[in-house]
Length: 105
Image 1 (cartoon, rainbow, N blue to C red):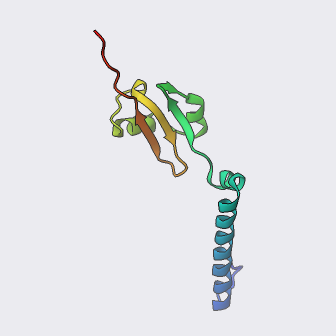
Image 2 (cartoon, rainbow, N blue to C red; image 1 turned 90 degrees about the horizontal axis):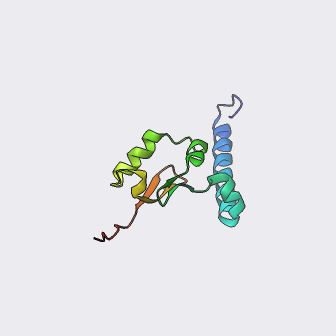
Image 3 (cartoon, rainbow, N blue to C red; image 1 turned 45 degrees about the vertical axis):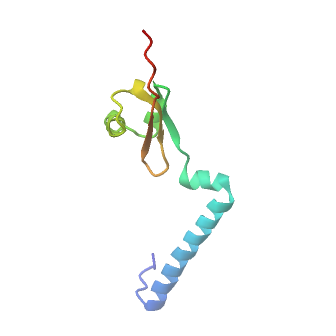
């Protein structure tokens, strides 16, 4: 990064550059939703009302094992029990269970 310059001044310039770039990217993502979407991405819907979107899973490189693990952690036994499952920007799968259906006899 510093081109072989191991001096104190070279290190300070490198550190200052990284801090400045981080600040400007953070400021740009705060001001522009389009830049935020490019840099941070958007949450992706994986399951909605028991319907599994396999194409979204493939695009996000989410395996069946990872999905089943997240469903088990949320207390769901199968995809039909899920109201929605969203793959968040940070990689966490948020699962919302369906409301219990009233049994009519």
